[in-house]
Image (tube, rainbow, N blue to C red; front, side):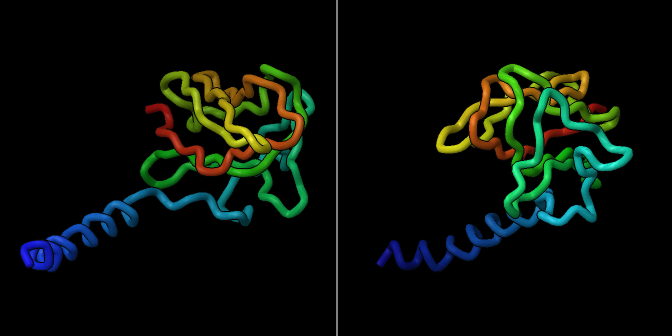
Length: 141
């Protein structure tokens, strides 16, 4: 009986707290290119070291900065050499300190770096693909 009373009182507060957390988070980058700066497009950063978009209906590599100053990366890429630069972000999209980020590559997880000079790097060679989806960090101040 005590549990039922607690659940009736606590559950609404928990749901409100969860909803507030979910809706206060910055929205993810959409799969469309309208709100993003797409890597390799005219006037945008170019791929380096043989990196390319994966294609096959997956989102192109892109980035954007939201109203709160967070940079969002997205897209699926392939190719490239081990420990090489994938692309370089312009000023205003860079981080204030080097970051090591978890990325998904094929059937494994791995890491990539977001470096203060704007370079996005892969630490190991990826033979299938690398997902940049859901990489979010605070831009330099």
